[in-house]
Image (cartoon, rainbow, N blue to C red):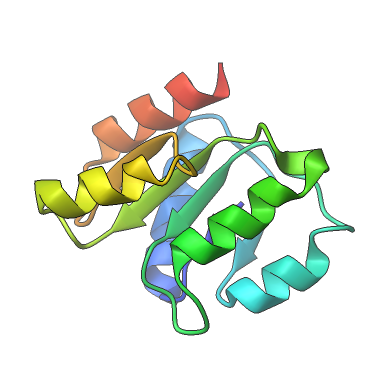
Length: 118
């Protein structure tokens, strides 16, 4: 599942996921809509933009992981913030398995996705 409010970035991420062998990707531009759907959807990986309009990606990730059905699903943070301090702070929350910076390096992205799906 992708939670990204920029439609161009969401489509790019979906294409990269397909290159990594991931199919049937759900895309949400609004984290509140995704949260409303949590009881009716299934997914085994989340790509979460950190800066969303309705709430932060950190808040959305926490809500996903509070649901027992998804408590062990890997969530990958994605953001334009590439400063090491910001990356460390995001990962320190414990909600994210990895962090990808924009612009996205396709090879690195695919490696991270495959590593988190094994």
